[in-house]
Length: 173
Image (cartoon, rainbow, N blue to C red; front, side):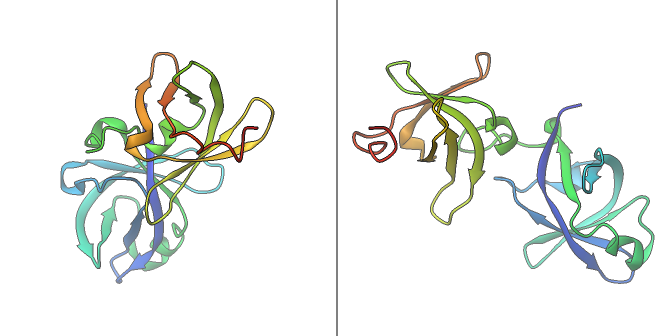
């Protein structure tokens, strides 16, 4: 099953045991159309939980899920990673892959030179920044701006990038 991490459990909400979720993905899922979420804490595998009720409070989803009875049990889920099945997520409006899909892809320049492997996606207020590890072991921080990204070759595990002249000069002599 193909799962995508969408956020984490912030805390419990109310006496019924609702979970307050912080969405860390690029899109907000429609939880009223999703049957299950998957929770994992630490190194445990994500486990399915049926969604019994969903609503929003101060821009965060509040979910009542099967297997969590009351506030104390909800408190035990604090910090857990929240996953959804990929098929339950809408496409990103910008056409970009999800964060989990980017990690491990090769960032390739227009002349077919490999800049390196994407190791992490850093969130900034303006745009995401990819941490790319070069073949020489250096870290390159690449701004993930649509103007610098030409496409994705999922079959070959590549992101086609086209940085403006001079952008990478501080990283690559």
